[in-house]
Amino acid sequence: MSDKINFIDENAVIEVKFNGSFYTDLKAMFMDVMTRDESKESIKTLASNLFTGQGDSYKDFYLLVLYSIIIEIENVAKEKGYTISKSIDDVTKENPLD
Image 1 (cartoon, one colour):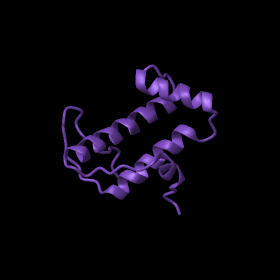
Image 2 (cartoon, helix red, strand yellow; image 1 turned 30 degrees about the vertical axis):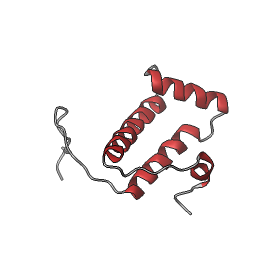
Image 3 (cartoon, helix red, strand yellow; image 1 turned 90 degrees about the vertical axis):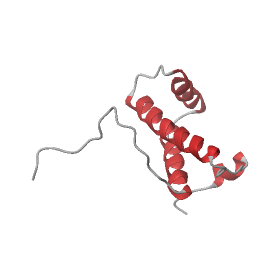
Image 4 (cartoon, rainbow, N blue to C red; image 1 turned 30 degrees about the horizontal axis):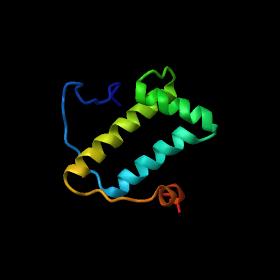
């Protein structure tokens, strides 16, 4: 067994295709990481840290990475006309494990 693992060069820009189901699961994971066992006040702090880049915890970093991927997927989907609108009530009731 090798003592090395592969990584993508940090300067490389790659194209990856995702289907809507993968995106939905990714967004559900983001929401779960952000809200699980958190009070409304701490969720507001996490969101503020996310949007200002001022977080200093592993959780802040993980949320930023997930959010960055989600936004990139949403931007490409919007450019291609693949987005749909859903009410917030419908989205918060969805559970990808059901």
